[in-house]
Amino acid sequence: MDFSRRTLSLVTLGLIIVALAAGVWWRLGGLKSAKAAAAGGPDSTKSANLPETSGASEFSTDVPQPVTGAKVLRDTLWISVSASGQAEAYRRATLNAQVEGRVVSVPVMESQRVARGDLLLGLDTTQSALDVATAQANLLKAQATYRQDVLFDDSITDSDVKAQRDKYARSMSGLDQAEVALRKAELTLARTAVRAPFDGWVADVKVVPGQHVTVGAPLMTVVDLNPIKVEVQVLEAELGDLTPGRRATVTFAAYPGERFHGHIESINPVVDPQTRTGRVTVVLTNRDHRIKPGMYAEISLDAEAIANCVLVPRSAILERGEGERRTMVFVYSPVDASHGLAKWRYVTVGRENDSLAQILPSDNEQEGVKPGEIVLVDGQQYLAHDTPVRLVKDVEAAGGRPGR
Image 1 (spheres, rainbow, N blue to C red):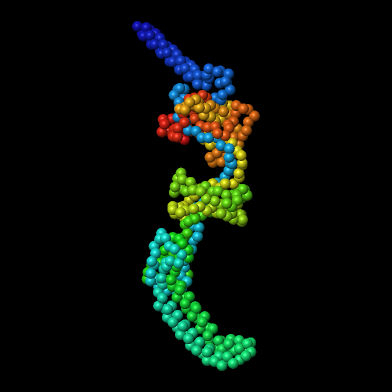
Image 2 (tube, rainbow, N blue to C red):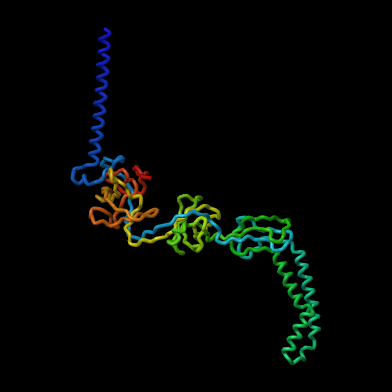
């Protein structure tokens, strides 16, 4: 009985192993057949020249797959230089007290818009006004003494002698000194009123009414925010490719995904010997004043221009093949108004920037792309040759598989 049970157990185990082996064999054979079917086609000679799609889950359905396309262009390719920096006010004036006194009024607040000449701060004018009145009185006294000293000089016929007499009389009467003293007192009185040096915004107010300030004490800052500038440090090896007036594309951490456009205003001719970089100043409009001084910025500066290039979006470039991988794109071949076929083509990529890639000419007529053709830029990553596709604006919204 024990022998029969042992024999039965061994037989059962053997049957299980055989069944598992058959299942594994069947599964591997099915996958191999499916892969061959996707890579092959009715024209075996044609499919032998197409790249492998290893690692990609291809669509084998006849239902057109949603994809996004873009036209092949013939245009100038701009090679850019990247740098980072921060926004700064185009003009910035820190206002300091030019006379000593007590603050009696601060009629502005931070972030307030002001025009050139607007009153920003007022100091007590009591002492300054008295000084002006005293200077005026002294001037009147000096003028009286002067007139008395030159009362009979009209009879002098020699012009040189008369000029010398006038100069002597002004000095002895104290008229020159009195006029200077009055101008000085009036200037001191005028400086008790602090006014905006240009149109801008008030920032960093540091005083309040009632506070006593001394000469040189910081009062507030006025900044001009339109235009606004961004200063960046560029490696010395890349400075030679930059020219004032070239376009600059700026992105700010505060506004992710949004691009601002400006131009290179100036390039500092001095390179920092410690960092081996040079300062480049970029200016951009800021009419709505969204960009604030101090905001972190990433900048792309147009440097080298390559004219008359065949260009495609970088997202259209794929690599396929086992072993030696080659670059390729999918070209949209229309079938009717509703859909077309994805045709892959080998391409040779030249120079690139952040968004575009140059396609070099090829002697093989079956390779490369032509201006005006449509290349697929999204949803094409998992396609096979001759897959039915339809062009959409948003692959994910259309139920496809976006590449991003």
